[in-house]
Amino acid sequence: MSTSRSEIEKEWTAHGLLCRVLILDIGHRCGYVRLPEDHIFFGVDFGVIYDYAPQIEVHGGITFSDRFDEKINDWWIGYDCAHSGDRPELSKIKNEETRKVYEKFPQHGEIRSLEYCIEQCENLALQLSQITCLDV
Image (cartoon, rainbow, N blue to C red):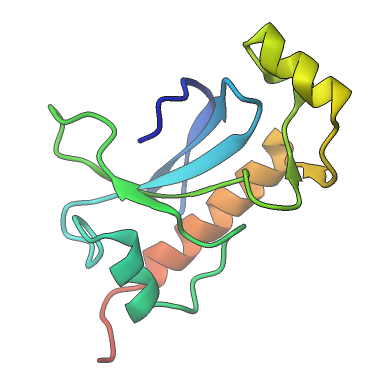
């Protein structure tokens, strides 16, 4: 993962899968869905997931698949809202100098709200819960 720090804004269960929205200290949100060990994509790199399941739709595409904690045998699939067209939420930027730069040189785009990210996570969880095998 990046050197950016984050905090959990919301954690809940949707379609039988644990979901989590994080806010990064740079003001962007990311969403994640935890897979059970018996899921076909457990332990699989997100690039491979895209190759075998390009129909999965989530904001900006899947950009993460990994553990959050090496001590726990879990696997998370996620997306981020730090793409072109995504703007950070200034009030969530932890570093004052960084916030001042964004205020001086504002980015174009849309702030992806917590509510938006919850919808994206729930949609991703639904899609992942419906994948039981792959046609290769």
